[in-house]
Every structure is written in structure tokens, then in C-alpha cells.
Image 1 (cartoon, rainbow, N blue to C red):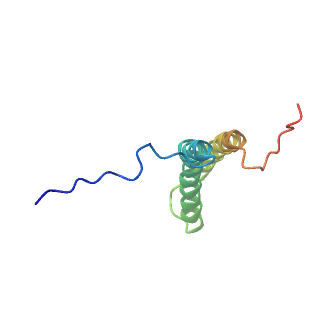
Image 2 (cartoon, rainbow, N blue to C red; image 1 turned 180 degrees about the vertical axis):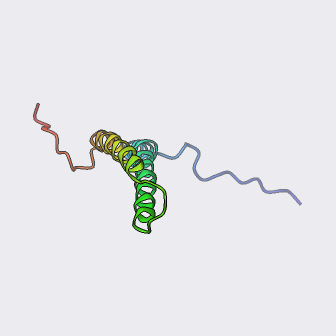
Length: 99
């Protein structure tokens, strides 16, 4: 018996989908920039919240310092988050495309 050799029906490499590279770039920017700052801000917000919960229950920990640090970190993260969204351009920030 002769062994049948089969050829693949497609010889050329497959074409990329329309806008696939842009979609990959948006995913990469979202994961690298937006999510990092959003999670960083969330962590400090939760730390400040825990401090205030302890203060309301008359525990010895003072939440003012943690709140001050959390406000600074959240402001910085919001600024970087806003810049990343501008770079991704989800349509939230329409550009003047006529120029």
C-alpha cells in the first residue's frame, strides 16, 4: 500500500484581519497603561478607606496621612489614565481630522 501524501489546501500565509494591528495596539496600550494606573489608584483608595473605617471605630490608627498619600496617588493616576485614554482614542476625545 502506498502512503497518501496530503498537501495543505492553503499554501500562502493567512491574511490579517482588517484593523487587526490597530486592535492589537489598543489592547497593548490598555493593558500596559490604563489598567496599571487604575489598579494603582484603586489600591490606595482602598487603603485610605480602611484607614477611615478604623477611625470611625475608634482604633488608634490615624487615617489623615494615608488619605493625603491616597489623594496624591489617585490624582497622579487619574492624570496618567487620562493621557493613556487620549493615546488610545476610544472616540471619547474626537480629533479634528480635517487638519
